[in-house]
Amino acid sequence: MATPQDRQLVEQWRSIQSTYFRTAAAIDRALEARFSIGLTEFEILDLVAESADAACRMKQLGERTPMTQSAMSKVVDRLEKAGLISRHSCADDRRSLFLELTDAGRALHGEAAVEHRALLKENLA
Amino acid sequence: MATPQDRQLVEQWRSIQSTYFRTAAAIDRALEARFSIGLTEFEILDLVAESADAACRMKQLGERTPMTQSAMSKVVDRLEKAGLISRHSCADDRRSLFLELTDAGRALHGEAAVEHRALLKENLA
DNA sequence: TCAACTTATATGACACGTCATTGAATGACA
DNA sequence: TGTCATTCAATGACGTGTCATATAAGTTGA
Image (cartoon, rainbow over all chains, first blue to last red; front, top):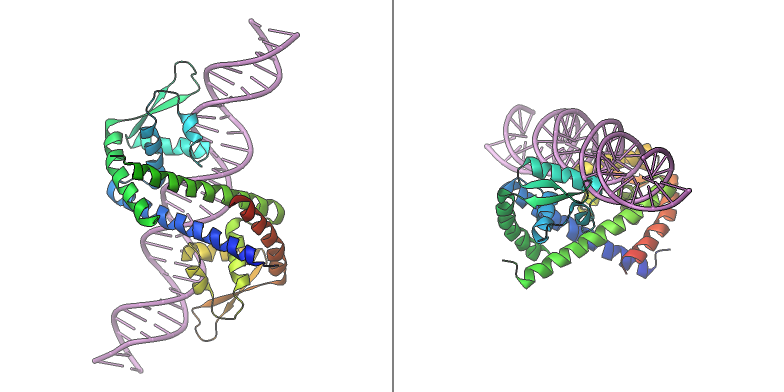
């Protein structure tokens, strides 16, 4: 039943889980403590920050993250309420929205990114 | 600001996230569909199944999983209600509980484990 | 141009996880 | 032995994610 290969697979899986949870928790706590945003919020900020163009983005961003469309929508809600991001409707397709960092959002992202990268380095070694 | 090393770290992190979510979702769906249990429930069953002894386990199991003590307690609740596991109080320390698979639990775990390993193999290649 | 279909996002109900707290048992030590 | 601190597990309040659906806009084809 439990072949050595099975055990090895399970070990590998647990190692991924453990790395994922440890790292995510560390980043989440740090960002929450210093900037009052969670990891999910940061990840959206980060995606928006690295998308330099003005395309209609909500949809495309969804393709770059394991998040659900529904989850995205709610995260963006929170970011908008926090004044870090703004939604703009798209001229050529009014169903779509594109997102833009506010000045506050850009500033916060800049600082938070430093922390984020540092914690990744610390945890993914 | 964004050094090549930073980018590489972020790539690595996204890859871990993606693998984790993809794999977890695949297993979760399959187990839910065939056995009406989630991934979390399976993981507890799996841990109990591989702990052969009769030690007071609730605590020790907690050390082998990224789950919170609180989360564990609730998962065990569900497993107990589903008749797959039973809690037994411990003679030498009545604060502790140890867990045991019921016959149904052992049977389900046996089948589910096959599916679990197969999906790990498929997703962690 | 009008129906039927598809696509982009938002929302409500619900499930699950976390945090903080509680209750109960144990341990330490004067 | 009596008090105080510690440990194990359970629970309630709460936040966030998911699924199913709603809303609105766009597309297709007779």
